[in-house]
Length: 367
Ligand SMILES: Nc1ncnc2c1ncn2[C@@H]1O[C@H](COP(=O)(O)OP(=O)(O)OP(=O)(O)O)[C@@H](O)[C@H]1O
Ligand SMILES: [Mg+2]
Image 1 (tube, rainbow, N blue to C red):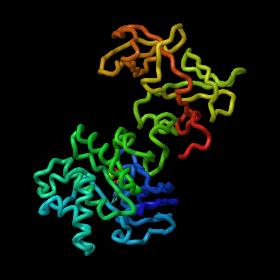
Image 2 (image 1 turned 135 degrees about the vertical axis):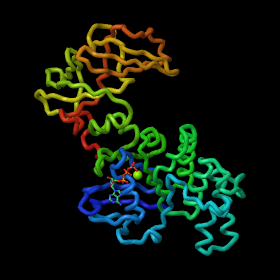
Image 3 (image 1 turned 180 degrees about the vertical axis):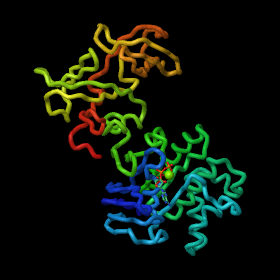
Image 4 (image 1 turned 90 degrees about the vertical axis):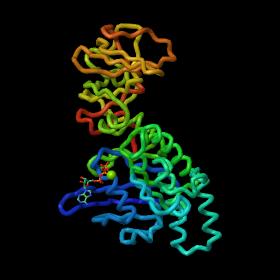
């Protein structure tokens, strides 16, 4: 059985240091939920609280309707996978996976059936008699995953399970993890500081900074309408520009230097005139057919296969990254060329002057 996890006003302190001041979130049954944020922001701390290895200084954590704050880790029915695979070096693959079941005194036939099925699910049947030292990192991580899932936990917790693997294997394993999670359908909390990995595997992501959640949403929501400037720059690349927003007869108008963009609507803007921060992603600029836009000079232009990456120095000295899809049959770009860039109004993200709050996000965005 899989459960819903509810964290309600959770507090974590180590002595006087407050690591998590006041955190609330709800993870749905069967969901693949990722905690993402820079090093030291409290991801592992929160995961260990859900696991029961860390005390809770305030608030409640529930699995479905039961408060588990004081429940011993062994009674929470969780499976865990860590960065260092933590599989037993003196047991072969089959015995490693069987361990959690033999420990529970289940009938031998039953154990054999479940272990064989799990080895097939994570695709390591052919290594079942091997000792861990003769497995690659990715294969060892599959063993660790099988061992965590075979006990049929209510919750699967994973802390940076792929960070010891090389780049290519990381991509292969993250696809495998996502596929296996969907097959077994166990509520999963996954910790990583790799934003691309989080985007690839998650149903929803919570972006954390200094123990505080900045934004919770699907990868697409977070990428397209980040809740604040920190999220905009942490997920993917964003150019941040200074601008001003002004109410005109035909709606809000954004100006960035001399460039004016009619915005249609800006849900969080109350009218008048205000300074703002503007964030634009490299694929959201285009070369227009008139003279209006951000003017600058290309400082470098590099073909990277699917796209060309250009860096442009604007007249005010700031830099923009601008990529062009190679499928579009665009003109040649060379260092030294003068260009005028426009932005699609619906793609622009506008924040208040401090960058703390999005004005572009729809009202009621989950934070
Ligand atoms: N046992 C402890 N005692 C005191 N402080 C701790 C303890 N464990 C963690 N911390 C502090 O809590 C903060 C959050 O640590 P945590 O390990 O949760 O970060 P993280 O987000 O998992 O980072 P990383 O990506 O580097 O693993 C850090 O400032 C850390 O120094
Ligand atoms: Mg950590």
